[in-house]
Image (cartoon, rainbow, N blue to C red):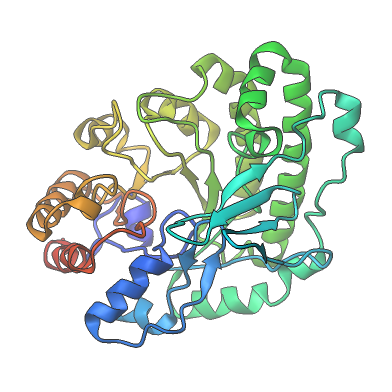
Length: 375
């Protein structure tokens, strides 16, 4: 794993499944895969309620030769998950005050239904708002012991921020329309909101590094900044509002640990990659090869010396859910041929394995990785 992250060719391509909330598998897809294998599928734990991701058991991680182990913070002492429901929906409020709702029938995820800062339009209102306590001791109970167990077993240890990053959490709190209007029409307000979230993230990460910094291989940050066709904000806005705060956070991580910086940013982010690199990013995920300007050949050629590509192993928008097993094999083989040479590649799907992925296609992906994943 360390060789791959340092752009050297190891004995085989490292593989990730479930070490982060953006490299996992839907509980429905995992249940279908277990049933396909003839294994018990009744008790599947959920590691992320919003995305309905399965917690992949240690036994399965070993069977699949997964090289990474993810760590998760505990819930804060003043909040617990309480799911309410009516005839048609289930919903819950998270510690930020965001309400998430999912249909009981045919629902794949919980979607945002309430944004707690939607009606706040003043800096004074932001400062009076009740914010989460990032250093609540309950978040870190048992964290050191779990990190030591994974590290001593020879796995890469990864852990991420406590919520979405600077390109995400403001939109979740304000509502997407409000937030993008803020960036254009009320930049002082936008900067204040970002500074508040920066302070929360810095305090949280500082505590993480205090507890497990010497054991941490990779720090995970989620900064969804792309759509299917291009960035969600102009590069100029990204450089003004997001990049400086990324740089400040990442500098602290690198100063206090040896961890590499992993950034998750869906969609077409080609235009922003130089800024991510300048901010301190070492690893790009999910490498959305079906998005505009995200041709893997071009990405490897232009950025392969600076970035490890953690993802991009198979297209999850079309090929994995809708293709044949043969098409899945062809896609996996091609992506390995492009991204693996010279190291700097960790195999994972483009984002999480979704609920509608047939188990035959998942099997085809895994078998092809095993066949072609050796250097």
